[in-house]
Each structure stands twice: as C-alpha cells, then as structure tokens.
Length: 382
Image 1 (spheres, rainbow, N blue to C red):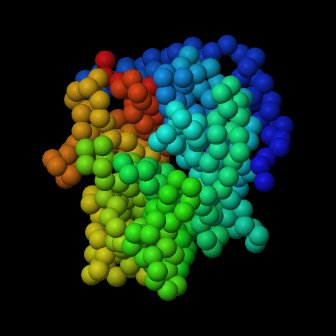
Image 2: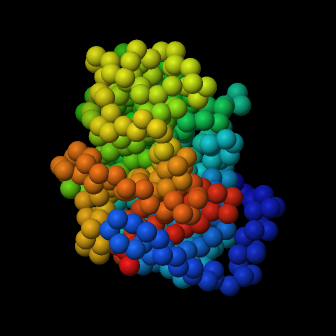
C-alpha cells in the first residue's frame, strides 16, 4: 500500500526547506595523496540519506532518506519536499528506504527502482524492491509496483543489504543481508545472505545457476554473504563487485560470481562484537567457499561503492571508492588488474559516516553522509 501521508515532523521539515533559500555552497580544502581535495557542500538537512542517483541531462539528483522519503535535489542544491507515491517502509534500526537506481532505459520509460525494508506479519521485516515512473514535474513516483520480496522475513532491524546494480545485459542484481540470522546465509531455500539476479520486471532468468533445483530459490546468483551494503558494476570488464560489512573484523570486497559460496558464517576473518568467536566459523578459509578478494582485518564499516571512470581527474582513473561508516572516511583503492595494491583514506576531517559514493556525470564524486543532519558533498581534486 502506498503511503498517503507523511508524518507531521517530516511535513514541517519539508515546508522549512521550501521557505528557506538554497543552501550556500561551502567549500573545504582537504588533503590527499593526489593533491588538494575540494569538497563542496551541495545540500545539508537530509535525514540519514542512503543513496543518490543522477537524472540525465543535468536535471539534478534523487536522494533517499532512510525514514522513508525520496527527495529531488536540483543542480543548484535546492531540496524538494518528499515525493508522493513512495511505498510505506519499515523504518526501524537499519531498515527504511534504501537504494535508488534509474532504469537503464530511463530516458524512454522514466522508471525508478527502489529497495527498502518491508514489514511482515509478525513484526519482522525483509528487503523489497519495486519500481515506478518519475513524473515529469519531479513531484511523484507513479504506478509503483513491487517486483521482488526477500523471503522469509526475518529481520528485527539488522542486515538488509539492499544495493541494486544493473549489469551490461540489463539484469538486475540485488544484494541481501542475512538479517542477523547467520545460518540462513547457507540455506538455499531462503533469500537471506544472497545476491539475486532477476529481470527488470522481477521474473527469474532461466539460466540462473539454481533454477530447477528442489527446495532452492531460483532467484539466487551467489550466497554466503553477511551484509553487503555496497555494490557496483566494474565499467572496464562488466563484472559486478560487492563489499560487505563484516562482524568485528573481516569486512570484505568480492567479485560476484555465478553460483559461488562466499562462506559466511562458516568462513570469516572476524569475531562477534563481544569478541567471542562466530559459533559457526570453521576458519578464515573453508573448502568449497570463495575467500575474500580483499579483506580488512579491522572493519571500516563498508557501505556504498563506485568505480571511477572519467577523464576529469586523471589520478583517480581506474580507482574504486568505498564509503566507511565506522572509520568515517572514504576509502580510495588502486588496482593492478583486479588486485588491490594501494589504499588511501579520504574525508576523515569531516568526521561523518559515509553512506554512499557515486561518480557524477560531471566527473566529480558525490558523497552522502549518514547523519541526522546528513549532507551531500561534491568532491574533486583542485
């Protein structure tokens, strides 16, 4: 059921946005190995923003707020009221309105995809994905339809995953957390701790690796994941990469492969937050599972991810950028082929949780901070 009203506090916030002028752009100069970073505040006042997507032809951006709002941000930094037609979300713990991506054919179909936490009947929730058409006046999402639901619904507020990636062939990949129910990541009759691959309308491709197997969900592409909160398409070879928030230690970067088991919770480099071992863990590597492509023994708290593929800032070409929630910085990775050979931490001076990072059509990086007074920053080399 689509939400008909917005909470009073959010309505009041929206009215304030329209009553105030555009936020004055603040520019900060920060240090980096490749030169001075120029960090421009595009807009503040976002309530725990989670994802940003760019509309074509320099029309502006769409930003999700975890509380349940989809907002339009103009190129001048003006923030809209919440768009109408957004589904009702389960906004508890880590749940809420999460990722937003445009259809690969957006210029023709104006379709927007959203992932979000959806309530079940027993007080628990799971990840859902739906789509609707962005109105030409940028004020509503029309005809919203749910195309995917994580089953069963097991989350009490944790580990939704929820990143959306279209590959070169137009398939939609969805990352799904294990809802803090560790063993389910290995259960192929459940959609916890999985990456699924579907058509844009939600149908399951016949060539998915587990199609036709008894008691196995046909949507599954790979499994054995904890909480994959970042994913992106590698623009140089067309592979889908994901990063996941490990327990205490053991955040991972992985290349997503057909039918592979990434080990959680049987294989992990981390422990419980209490310091006790993961009960199911058999070691850092386990036969029959894929080890991490790259691992952080001390968890940065990985989140959104982007590959840099633009000529504007040549020192960043073929780098990857990953947001970090715990260490409160932006991680820059350099590669030789697919191998990570160097890491730099950026934006630590801001002391804000980095939730998402995207490359904008202008060649700048755009970064969202997961705060009560969240910000959208534009980042480039001076």
